[in-house]
Image (cartoon, rainbow, N blue to C red; front, side, top):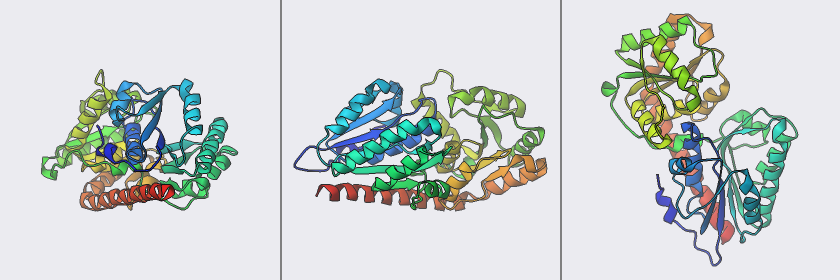
Length: 368
């Protein structure tokens, strides 16, 4: 997907350069979603765009819509060139970090030190540093301390939950950038005939009560059960769930990531209910008009906090705390929330558009 924003240039007397980090595995549609949102913010902010993709293959560039004229740096071997281009960049560069989770365990101290140095360098060049909505994972010191210093030096630093903001000493909570995506389909409820399940392969298989709740909900609502794969490593679990639930299984298989995303969103556009413990499965499902529900034993707060940040509460339930009837009641309640969800999703998209506009104004002001 090519963005129409490529042609929007910031007119200055001297050439300008924007750096954006877009790493991620091509086997994770959710990562592609938020990296694409990050790229949208970076496009059109400078004369030259420098993209670091890590080990991303060619299909990753197509997933994100990286423009052909961008300078693309791949693999860790290209990090010295990235740093050199940053060091030698003209005045007023823009540095855009990628949205998503930020691991701050003890193994990331050196990385955070480098990111702090990059931030200081851009500020010394009178440039602008942008940190799109992010969530902190596994915080430890000194990585968290370094990260907080870098965030405070950034003109735009956003957090997708209050806990992450507090850890970094920040105050601006914003919707996850994935909520900026537009619906791929807008089928009316009468045309929606699927209940979709997509669970992490690393978790244990759900128990009998969970299975009964899913089957009974599908029967009561006249829905077909389908399992799908949004992250490649979950494919075997999706196959097992389809067998256990008597549902249809849509594999990823040999399909490339671009086609797989389109196929997934077509299914979400036909679903009335999507059950998952993957945050961006539920984000895309909600955007495409399905009711999202997290129903697993001991759910983490990641999904509930991200949805609470846009005003949507109560979509997560601990499957270990009730019998099949209680779990079914939770799922039934989610099906009645589509109108409420639509309003919050529209407001989240508008909020993200306002933040992007403010970011672009900040860059223009820095170069005035």
